[in-house]
Image 1: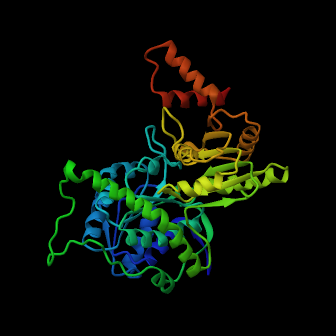
Image 2: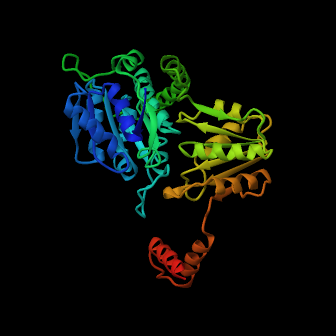
Image 3: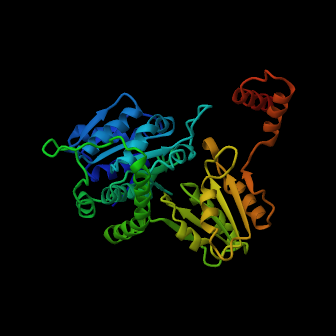
Length: 418
């Protein structure tokens, strides 16, 4: 049954249906509504048996999740932005220990300067931590991915990060359907850990490992990601059979069959990209869209197949690696390097940083320029070049030029008064 729900509430209800036994959280926008809703469900007795643990920091949240999972409990937490960075040491430990924790990342920019709005800088910074990373296009998929995430995590004994765009999804109200407890129970078996701390059968975990075995340990973490690449489509197929809708998987294609130009992206911007592609299709432009759901493991074979006939590829990213450019792009170009006929033109577009709107008008101009091969290899969508040039001149004119962010804000304020 469909209900009008905030994205965060829908995710909270989906997580509750998965019967976590420990939920640990520290509030940070924009994920707070998720754990608030879960705390209310625990307090009311609707989610039981479950212990909701308020911790003193995000590092504490992941540390509690590690301890709970190691003791044999189904564990869940959520975070965003600086919170994810603060728990980074424990994030790597969770993966290294092979603990099937599920965590929501309500994607938000990282500072400095401080910014609470959406981009993918936070989760992208942890892409090599050993966690599976799944990105939701809309709130229904975000809800569905959490149910799949628990099953993936526990089948493979590897943690899973479900990434949903902060505010754009977390605070948006949509028509959602939350599966029944009975249906989720049928899809998600009771948690049977591969490893557990048990006083009756004592073992150590997280022991010191020297050069004689460390390479092998890290290689096995890589093998788990390869196993996940095979498991994710199967879990999505099982989900579709159980719940009657396609959701998840490695990637999905949209109007790609005859496309000469294909746009690759992940997250909520895919909806706007598809709308723009539809408009351009009506004008005769053969353009398609590939939406990545799984970023880690990166679905190289699936990407290669999806892009095999494209003449040009445009990758729209909401994060970037300073000094080099695209993050997703590097993986896409690596994946297509084995093609007999690679796309003739490839473009990386950095867009929507810090919550800047990605509009149909801007995307239309971008895609028209791409089809005409007028784009630079690395493009920053809607970059205010005048604002940048002012600051560069200021820095060149005097050594003590001041803090960049504050200078830009003063320039914008002064320009607005002219």
